[in-house]
Image (tube, helix red, strand yellow):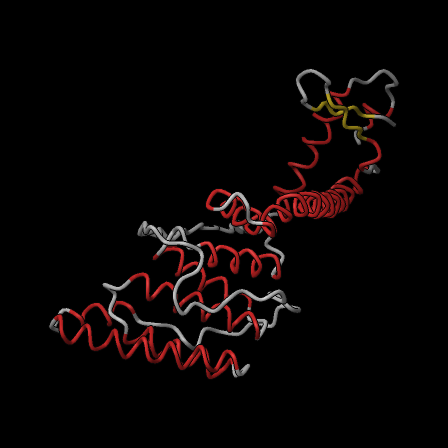
Length: 276
């Protein structure tokens, strides 16, 4: 702090702040050896959903179990991705009969995957569903939606919740009324601490089925957990800001304790008051 302010008893808050800012600006300018700029870019993928008049229970769909999810997230990289671009190019050269033949083969692979699921052979189950997705023509979106959702169920059993959520998202893109896909994605989101996304899916489920018991319970259970998490994050953020402020103010013989934030009851804005 300057000698002028130290020798003056009646100093306004504005004068103190202006004096500190001036000194800080000079310090930073004299010690600056270059500019470091961090650029962040937010990317979003546009997803197209195909509306379909479908119910919760699709034929040959794996039924929901009470233990999904059943543990901590143990995810891995996606080694079972389906190249839909190549599949689309390939289908342009196929006849309708050939496409129907591939659909039947995909159905047989799905049946094999369902049997593997019942035997708790989830790796084989994922393998069969992936083979089916790689051959099932894109013109059969409902069948592909079931394959994605079933593969998501198998991944949940292996606690690969991020990949499970991805599969359920693919299923929802193909059938935006697929209740079971929303349910499994909501569970996978919650298992990976994406509580806001999970709550959004449960609310969507209630739009599709207002009597869904699990969704009704979740929209009551999750908001307090979200609020608790947000308060914890806010406390951690304010602590880090306080440490940074103390580091900046230390050369001036000050700390963040010299400044008080007061919120206006009407405008909800904040004013900063300085105290020695």
